[in-house]
Length: 229
Image 1 (tube, rainbow, N blue to C red):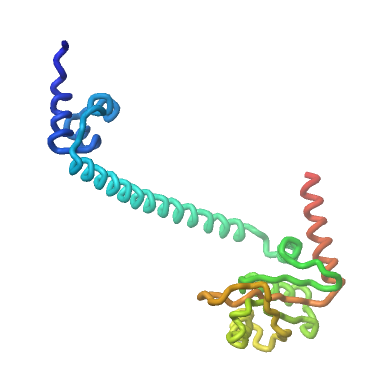
Image 2: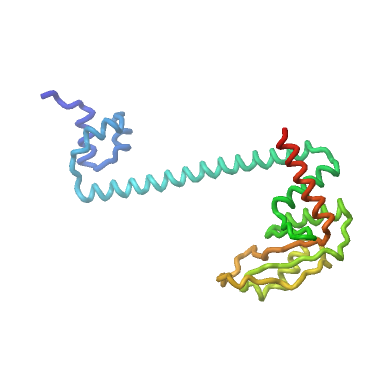
């Protein structure tokens, strides 16, 4: 019978007497884990050694998961920074022309707005979206603000905060005299606790059939032209 290699004898000793893991034995002997698997798979460990190995493996998994999380977070943050800068670069390249603003407003309305007859309407939980939409309406079309209204849609649990949220939206939209219609509450909602940052959904409505048709047709004309190549 061929004598066992010295590395194998040492590996078996480290496994049986000290209960070391394959990673630890591989590091000490310079033997690959695949080779160790063939050498050591039949060796029996005491219950104490088995439990220690299990603890080591769980600790290793936890350490690996933590390292992976840090690496992934760094990658995400780097990708986010690159994406933000790319967006800024594109915006900086755009010509300062009314057509750019009008097209962006039309595309936003086509994608996110309500197309009910006779009105331009858009709803959002994000104040910056509505602020932009409102600012562009005023800048591009000098809208008649008597035709402009807002309405909050909220869960029933938010009723005690209604006035506070309306004030918050007026502040965010830079419209202290904005006309808010009666707030609507969702009777289907089972939410009982309001989370931080919740301010409901705000709907902006401007009554103008002509403006609605202008925005829709502008967006569709651009899409049609771009699709034709």
